[in-house]
Image 1 (cartoon, one colour):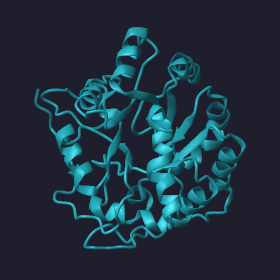
Image 2: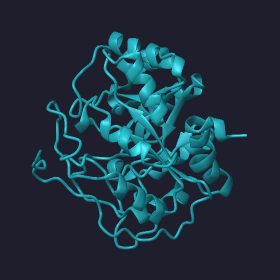
Image 3: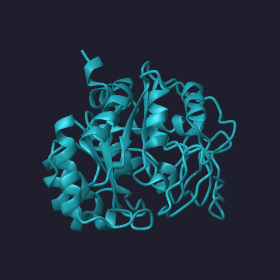
Length: 305
């Protein structure tokens, strides 16, 4: 089946630089995606956007180029709850990838077991209205209770202004909860202001809540962009990520977000995105927790001594 990209779609950066920052051995890119390819894994009829293709082979080549050892592949909203492209990538990874699926309430136990065997370890709830249709909280809670016995966690994606109305739901979930991209803070507001303070409070009060300190390219308004060799990109995002890494060193994750769906402004050089990491995790100890220890504990717990 042939698909036409959404007008204005930005394709991923071709020929990324080699990072200057050397990742610690065993580093995990804990948030990335595969798109299609559409002729093998068609995009969902209900999708809000049509991306460029981004295959598992291209993702694994980027992993090796950047110096990562493993990936956590998150189901992209353009595939809806059809997880075939994700499962295919996991099976081809030689146990170097785990997955976060999107499941509907009519998923069968057999389907959950099949996904678990392939390497799925979580499901994602998307509350960003421009990306996904609304699902009632009682349905999501039902799904969370279905996946909890498998040891899966719930990944949540939302925008900072929506946290007050979602707070009680998130804190009632029966699993580990992983927040995508720091809950998308408005980085023009103070890091110690009330909006981000609510997110920090939620993590302080609930030890089962983790955060990805990823996607500075998506959150930054002042830059500078991760292009043209820039070694100190997205400085306006740094205080927010540093706050979480410093405060919750054992509950933070980082990922490239390749191939960066729905970026409107620019497409970052993924090598320079890796070079962003020391700004938010400045010591070898924090880097190892962020990139190795924490993702291994969550996604490959049987390999952690």
